[in-house]
Length: 68
Image 1 (cartoon, rainbow, N blue to C red):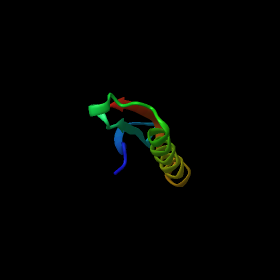
Image 2 (cartoon, rainbow, N blue to C red; image 1 turned 90 degrees about the horizontal axis):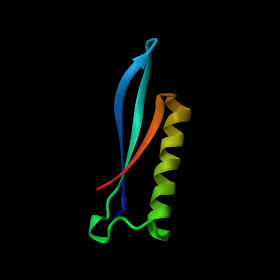
Image 3 (tube, rainbow, N blue to C red; image 1 turned 90 degrees about the vertical axis):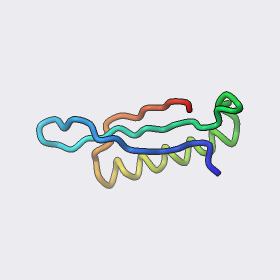
Image 4 (tube, one colour; image 1 turned 180 degrees about the horizontal axis):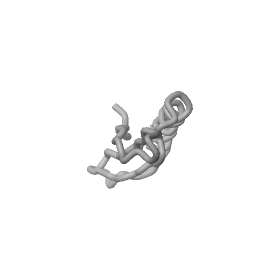
């Protein structure tokens, strides 16, 4: 089970260009979301996924990181 959840939220488009924000949620609240080796690995994987989408679709304009 991953300690990081990834979602995309559409945001207002500028000049007709679609845009979205990647929402990364650290989801181990029972342990106060420690950034340990496992969390870093999951976060790295999520950021790789965001980069793939940015390259393929070009619509990621921001990355928001929050805790659960």
